[in-house]
Length: 208
Image 1 (cartoon, helix red, strand yellow):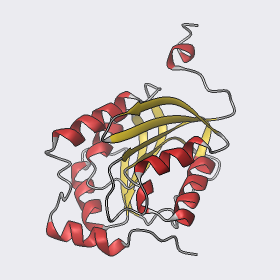
Image 2 (image 1 turned 90 degrees about the vertical axis):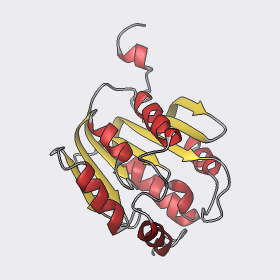
Image 3 (image 1 turned 45 degrees about the vertical axis):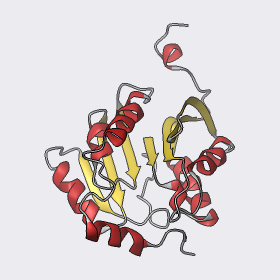
Image 4 (image 1 turned 30 degrees about the horizontal axis):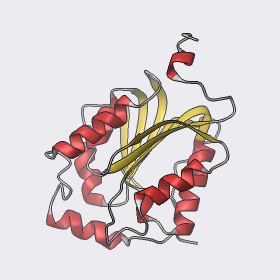
């Protein structure tokens, strides 16, 4: 079954009208939000990361500084091309076209230790969001980090609000929330895949 929600044509139309339709490259709101997102990562370095819904790669560029390998994907051709140009000097970053959650990278025994769901969950219907969450959790290695960050105000083209996405994630078995950053504009949550038991940054650094 194909997951539904906001149709793919919506994104094709947005990128046909502008290379950067949400002004990620120029708007202070998004620059700041991306910096906050990366600042909330509990580990200094990640071995293998996955960013579905990477758009033009503005957040990807920041994540690349903290990862040994990073796979970033988007469903529309135009932002994939933009992200590839933006990350062309980062050989450890791969940008692909992929329709998640129906398509998903083959993980095998080498699962991701970081997955970032940024401005993605509210585009999916109930079945699609359930599948996205299930595949995300299954693809995270024990102790791995899941970061979710979503816009909160209502948008006509969204299948749900950002708060709904985070409420669902908070109730998922196998995830423990360790960070919550809340503003009027967006929510940001960091979850760890358990077991093993989740530890704070200070605990992981041996401070207590």
